[in-house]
Amino acid sequence: MFRLRTPSWVKRHLKAYPSLDSVPDSVFDQIRKNMQKFSHDRPLISVVIIAYNEEEDLLYTLSSLSEMSSYYPTEILVVNNNSTDRTQEILDRCGVRSIMEKRQGIGWARQAGLEGARGDIIINGDADSIYPPHWSEEMAEVLLNDPSTSTVYSRYSFIPSGEASRLPLSIHEIFSTILFRLRRLYADPVNVMGFSFGFRKADALELGGFEVEGEHRWEDGLMVLALTDKGKISLVRSNKARVWTSDRRLIIDGGYRQAFVQRAKKHLGYMPDYLNLKSTIK
Image (cartoon, rainbow, N blue to C red; front, side, top):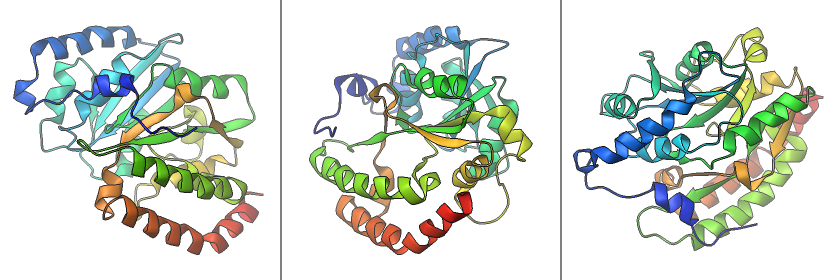
């Protein structure tokens, strides 16, 4: 199902302010109040978010996370990866448990979150995405009820920048779904995005945690690939777990059209590697 419009519940969290100083105290107070339900000393689920210089988007993400359902004892932990902007100030004003990881890199940040999380189930996210109320529940329930699953991930849609239309993004997502389904047959680990995936903490620690050395930027994917030794990868299909994430990854690649062309060429070129990955997983 493809969406031509950004849902109203997503827009509600995206209220624009001219600057951080112009955000009313009441906004921080409400998020802080909502976050109190995630203050568990012995949570079952840990929602771990990594953040680096996310002053512009972090408040939106925390607003959505603060309204999550908490059927299971859940904590929210944000890893500040040595930010130089006002990221930590936002975390403190919103009453979010956070830890600082001064070693720069996604792998270091994910590993710090893995080690600092107190829950048995780790649900990973990023600080530039909007999460639906039942996201962590939907993801965790698969891991809690299906011992044969080692990794879960969900679907996602892009949030258009500014006044941009959702139409080109919807078209982009239609064609991306074709590649997605092809990769599910041969290389499902490639489909797993860092802003929405989960696993059991014990499994990840036993495997040595996240890759932190080297210049690669596929630390999440390497973890997912390693976890296939523990069980299968499961896609959480429910729209209750669909994440809405920033389109800045597409903007960085030259805009929507250019990003699609580049990604299509890249993944089609990777098909021999995907086939080999399938044989490796088997």
